Length: 257
Image (cartoon, rainbow, N blue to C red; front, side, top):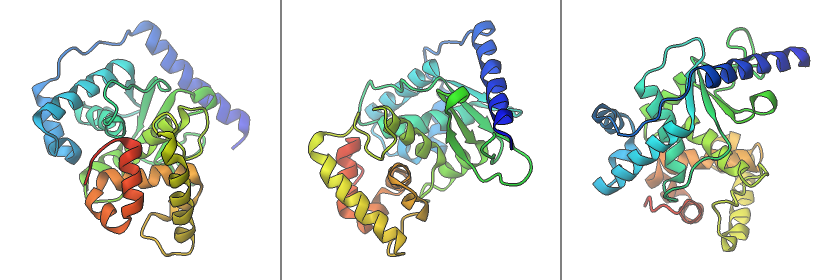
């Protein structure tokens, strides 16, 4: 597709969102609905494993996310479950850092299914399930609603597109998308992480790894891919990649063992 058309489509979405921000002010959430707790208990395995005190902190973080970030369906209706799964995807990677918030996103757009680089949801070449926006789509994220639900429907699966994209945002927070989330990572773990990351990328390319081959695309994709695996299947991840697991616990400051 012509680059000018792609820019035009991005601008159309951007200005549509801008009009909504101006003429339809965002409602502030003060309390956590009891029905939301039931949804989390049914759909989010990470939440279920928390203590009562931690669950309250998780709920508070979701409220903060709702107040910071709009969640909008594009040509689809969305409900509380959709919003809670988006917010959970954001809260899980940051849960080891109480009080931290995403400063580089204003809105998450939900499409029904996959889309292409020009945000089209019909036709050939629609193989994207999640994307952090750039250019006219800066400070936005696009997620496939179907893929979002799938990532939480199978908690023992390795894939979770929501977590994947929010880890990209954390990686971007220091100004570089390079697989080094320096806003999270203590300096003493940088070299060990680089060593483990490049060793595992080499193993993936040589087909000696059980990690999703997409993780060998580059360092940024490796971080997001292994984060999906780490948070969705921590026991399995620890068994197969103990050194990598130990480093990720330190980076994300979470004890998932």
